[in-house]
Image (cartoon, rainbow, N blue to C red):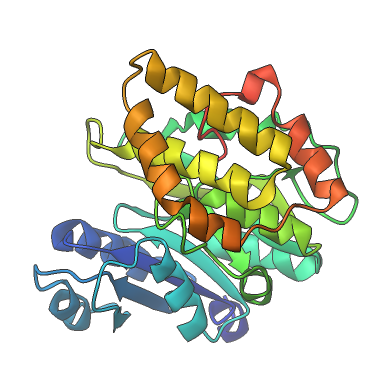
Length: 299
């Protein structure tokens, strides 16, 4: 591996109060043959996370956000990166050996490619994440100037972005904060002319804690509705609102909380409302079919 290839991609990690899990991630990243620079954004941890990063043998750089910035911590990391590409990990995920070089080669070869969604293997058993199959079956037509399969979604902890494209699209949106935030970024990349593609030759490992995460579904439903108001036509946004309201009226779990959360953030969303260009809206509608109707599939 050349020094040039080692400097193409920075790994950005966001974390909050998960020091032990983060140290394992840093161990895995330090063992990669690419030896990528690593930036850890500490979202206001109180468990000595920053000190653990500084003491780690891998030489990761820590940026203290001073508070919980959610997904916006990734924006901070990208602004601090100096490489052309940024790969994203969370404090429970890392990259397979050689994956970052494969991703960088693809980004080098495809100048319009803004973000590459990787194949994700889950847990010690390395099970296929269900999202892999969904992304591989994307109904979007292939593009000659993009690798893999064009998509409008990805898993945040298994994606590699062109730094310039990420900044051009504005990064993750402040209104969503965290949870199902990837779809909006994919929309914004596509609206700016950047390609988003799924490429299974690039592999990430994800080892989430077992069990469900309280409130996760609520936040995803809230953010799916806010994404509709931020970028989709009024007919789509109104229909999505009516569907969530009907679910809340039926007593469906999490729906009422998600609706209240969306309505509280709606004024801010409307101030940033920017409907998608017709070509991107057409692509989004292709993904609104029955097979992809479940909220959050793109995240």
